[in-house]
Length: 154
Image 1 (cartoon, helix red, strand yellow):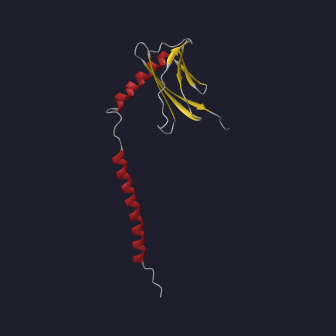
Image 2: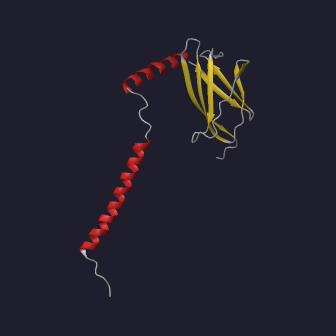
């Protein structure tokens, strides 16, 4: 004996399906809002004005950064607009993968011969070099450099 599929059964199946979808969406929305870290800045307009001022000051330095890596040492050439070594007061560098923080390294540089040298071991692949340097007048210079180390397969 087979049971007949009635309109009531179809209604219950439809309500159960949509109820499940709505419940999952509500759960995900609550989790997303609950784990959101909050505001980055209190006033985005003020932050944008500061960003523009800092960007213009950095552009006025006219510095260029050229990295070099021989498998054992990271070398950074920081040059001014005339190609001379830039007058760097402080230098902070983080080298890490673009996708995670597990392999982040903060090499300690020494300055010799117009170049910044730091011993460093990098596994093959893509690395980001996040550089923050300050000029003698306090102007901050920031740059991210994508660097590929190893055998690239094309």
